[in-house]
Figure 1 (tube, helix red, strand yellow):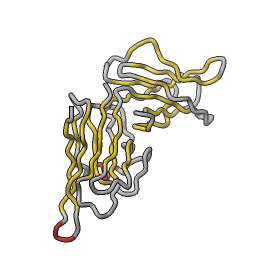
Figure 2: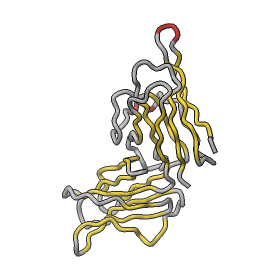
Figure 3: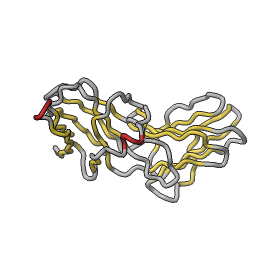
Figure 4: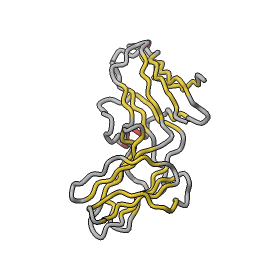
Length: 204
């Protein structure tokens, strides 16, 4: 079941900070930086912003000719192939499942040319991997948790600097949730300023 999350700004922030939400691909062969999945901007004090965390994903791929596939709905345990048929390069579901039911795998089975693979959630880029050569694959695996923090100058779909990620303290579990409030507190100016804090509070 999808999770409905409502961000609530209960902070004393006076800098109109942007709130960035992302996940990390925990697959062992993944070395790319995290992507800003949701970026909440201009949400003032005591205002709120709703978004959905779906259980399903979408996958897409691009080939070395600059061709890009459409988004295909995907679930954990699926394997997807980028292959060439009579129409050209396509992204196709493999009838075999992955060895790990918590993974989604995209493999390059083209005769030549590298590909890039992307995975989306709610139509927004969650993770990507470039330079996948023929007979190579990328594995995506996400645990049920989100990372959240105040990060300046980042837009949705952009890579988050690794130095910034190393300083992010808020990893919030989504286990057992169907509806929750994501509450931000802290902030302020001068001697009254306190660090931002985030809390995920179930509402159903």
